[in-house]
Image 1 (cartoon, helix red, strand yellow):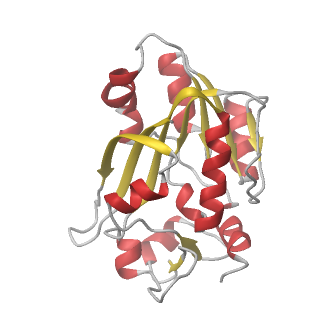
Image 2: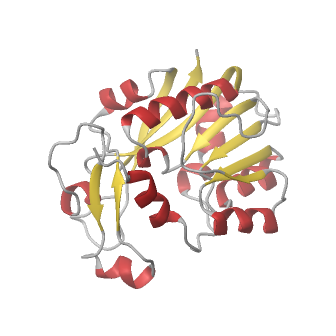
Length: 236
């Protein structure tokens, strides 16, 4: 099903966009989660899978002195990272997923992936998590986010017909505010939604769950939601 989903999602995201600010959950990540389990003075080696233009990893580098790396499928985004942060620690990758992928031939203390993993179908998600797990040091940590079915994308913009690969088509062409903000060649893509906390744990069962949370927010309507689950876990 949806054999071309990678091409569609890659085309959707391979564009220039401006997102210089970090999200609130990245601002709170160290004091609320990392410091509970890791020595607060330790300088972590961190990989951001799907780093975009690098705002999150740049914050961790500048604020805490972490050794940060990033990968993304968007060439404009990676060029931006290489220009404003450093060239050798950011790589352009393709959408193909292999269990033995090793982007920098390094082991990481922490791997984060923010609003990215749900663009993979069930099989590719499983294989990507296997590869990320291999890139972790023994006892390393992960922080992932997944879009929940409470999200307005699922409620109002999603084709809810049965999916046998975890993906649902989301069409943003009817969202006038989005089209005003984002000028792009296509306005639909595919998302792997998470239905519940149980579903979240099952998707990330390769890792030991330590803290499960969520974030949500809408500045335009009380009927809309930006609901995402957060998963903080540890290499088993």
